[in-house]
Image (cartoon, rainbow, N blue to C red; front, top):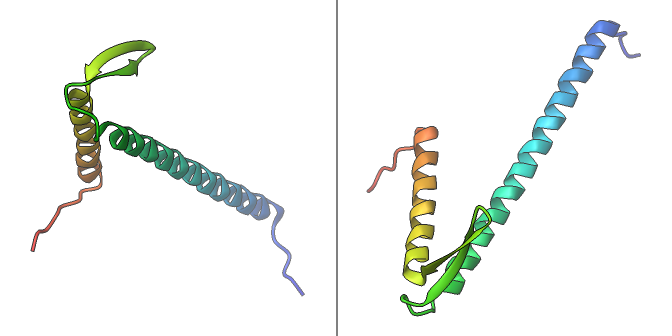
Length: 99
């Protein structure tokens, strides 16, 4: 036979359970967003790599179409990803140990 749980305690447990479920859902959604963004960056880089470096390309920045060269955009994409990784390492106190 199950022991009776105080109604107040039961409500606290239900609240904690709901909080855990919400947190897990938010984490799963954020992971999905990051994976989508990473795939978009990958597609841009793959599309630009075979092109001549001095060829024109266009990028939408805050609703404004800006003309650049392939070289400028490739460098900007790589720099953006490098900065993102550096910030992540700093935020999470990651130190790379080389052998």
